Image (tube, rainbow over the protein chains, first blue to last red):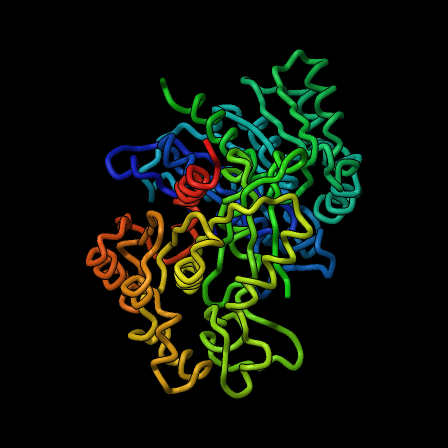
Length: 249
Length: 249
């Protein structure tokens, strides 16, 4: 597994908080590192950044010809089915394996925030809600929030988890919001001109949060689509959001 | 020829100044647009951005197997030799052809600044100094400043311009600084850990500027190399620098 890390100057002399960024379909550890523009703001706020890959890769790893299944499309679940089961354990990878590795290797403390884009926004929401003690702060960029009801979700959950939809709920942010909620406030940014908005279903999550009286800021931005130009336009806001919650100001 | 343009929100209602960004070896119009992080600052300052390609491309265009000659390596000269002559006219393309096209097609005014990275920094310096009436402001990121004396220059000038080195001087920023100077101040940023610093020769240009008492700020930054992480780290400074000179505040 490949991942990218950014350490701010403050990490030379002290342990710093960490912001996890989970990427979307087709991305690697490299996309947000190269195009997201998070580093400058992380430097200013004294926060480390971690960019995991979006799936296992390499010889012997199962794959599919479609861009939205297999390599580059792990969906942050633990696969239980067929050829996916041996390697596609991205939920455990992010929650346990990579976290343990980083804690031992880097000057980071135990205050972690998590965010992500599209499929990665889905990953951030489900991982944070299911592991509230591990994460202090939560945000997302144009996340897939209701994969059980979306063509970005049903196909993949069928493949990775099987046809028993009761096993899907643990990976659906809208269902988890209804069942678990979140201990803090949540920031979600969404482009109003996102070409994939019907697959993302932001309103389903906003409705679930509203029913629970969950503090959740969903901002919709005119003129923005699903691209990294959208992510980089609001990178500063998200780093600042997390910094205000991760630091003991 | 492909190029990229960014128009700030202010361009919806008025003509705005333009900042040209010339890219380095192997780049296209896309690199700085995707990885430079200039757009946000251009939006704040009401400045359009133009990213030309670094060479002609396509079938029938001469090329070389080396990364530093032919496509992706035009060096912003007008070639006079052999197979390069028909298409490799990048100096005229930037100074005349693309400028005319943009003036007719976009809501821009006649206040233009120019910057660039590496080979593109070389292009910015020589084009501005030779066309002082066309450009109001000038900066560069880790520019090649003395190509007549560098392996990033001698090989290419021999191929494009021939072996008579007297024809090279018009494309050498250090020589042009001695002969012409520049009507304003110049900002140059340079990484102290730049792996190509011996090819760039920033001190040669600084010495020529100093002899002329030319206002030139050469900033050397510890811990920065030649990558786009360096460019994006100082993109805001350069956009601000140009904005202060392009706007009639």
